[in-house]
Length: 290
View 1 (cartoon, rainbow, N blue to C red):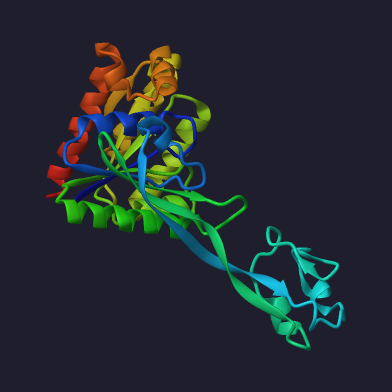
View 2: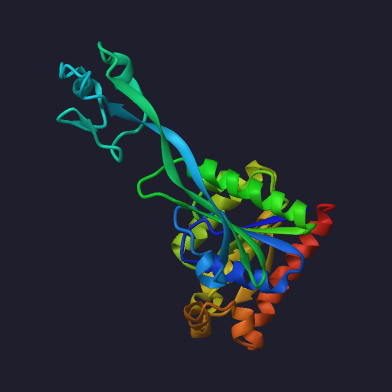
């Protein structure tokens, strides 16, 4: 089993477009969308849902009005201002359980929280495991771990060789959950100030977890000075820049049509770098002994 996670450090760099292209290029793979807070890989791959499961995580307080004496202690101690007229706002409640401990008549109980759903779907490129976190829900790192676990189970059951994970942006809990234990990280960046800054941050996370990394520069010709800055940084860090993809409206057109870029166009300027990036992923697996 070989696992690559595609990260970006920030949103909007073209990470999901690259994953969609990898899905079309790779053989014997399972796909997973680990960006559970704003999942969008399904928009590109048009999956057919085969299994739907609830994701339960965390707790919220519930007040039994029949038992409540309206003493007001719960309102006083709730630092999240989640209790009004002795009714708990489930969105504002952080599940700390302080109110349930302070209630003198035990009128407050903590109930498990249904935080979202996860799915096993089928696409024309192979199985896809994805999820959707509920509005204002947390614990996305836990859901990402579940998605990765289920993707590995699907791969093992079907005898598939590669797991391609569309990772979340940023460097927070969800990214750590998507990255830890992966065999290779492919960082998709862009030559903007924020793109360069956030690429450096996510590469530092990769170094912390000792995960080999490669870099793909999207829209490189929009700011060639920024592209050169990325290349100098990566050279200094011993990280290979495996592809430079030019800006082109065909990328957006492919997204609108719900088709991976490598199937939408045969323009070598666009397809060539993405194919080179996938070949670099395979080389990265071989270098890691996978």
